[in-house]
Image (cartoon, rainbow, N blue to C red; front, side, top):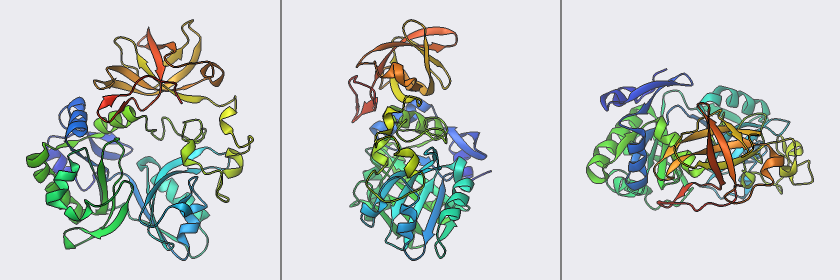
Length: 377
């Protein structure tokens, strides 16, 4: 499926790939160069494949709050909140961003691969009188990221510069269509995300490119850079670190689960172990690691002890000049993981070779500097 920015990407030299049925650029130049620009200057991403829902009705806020793990009721209007939709067993159906616009409107942004399933599941659980509108078809999603994002928007959309982190607004761009605007991101850098109708969205994207190239050496960025940037921060990806057989606690996302709010779908299952689900010995735990020497781990690579005992598998891996080596995230057997200490050694199998690794905390990179090794969460 082609998306509204498709022709712009071809003009800019995008290398297009199929991503969950959508034709999207994996890169424009090199993935590492695009990552560097985002960390040092600015980059812009097409995220039109992501789902954008609007939930409306009397007490839509309360209805959505009863579906997600985080406490939306405690967030003031005009703020965004990260959380999860859970199945009855406490596994993750999807991770989402919820945008609070008062008691009668909540916007949700969901993963592309889950959009239709999420819409059906949410509608099934909404009370009578609360409606979900899927705005995704014909809409554009744009993420402007990097320390230079502020200077790009000075000339393009100065009215959003006073927004704080995780603040969100509904505003008309170029005096035309209404857009959802949030000062959020998936790279660890400052930035904004925009969701709105394609007509205005395409011209807005082109304006960001034109102004950004002149002011901040901005580049268009693809899926490859987006994935590597989020991995440097240790941010989870649905289908790799998150899924229906895994709980948010397995992925170290305790902060996104409220133990004090009222009932939500999956609450009983996820909190049943004495209020401390992380002690469940049957579930793996997500750990970070870096490769000692050369070698790039990828999804599915086996993790072993130094004695060659299999203890887990890589969920996401790659190479980053900022980390200084190959690195990744892996789900590990909890009984082995519990004995690991800061800087503990292990092995990863890459193309049949057993490479030495050290376990460490994430983010792997922060504030322009590598993060010192520490105990993995």
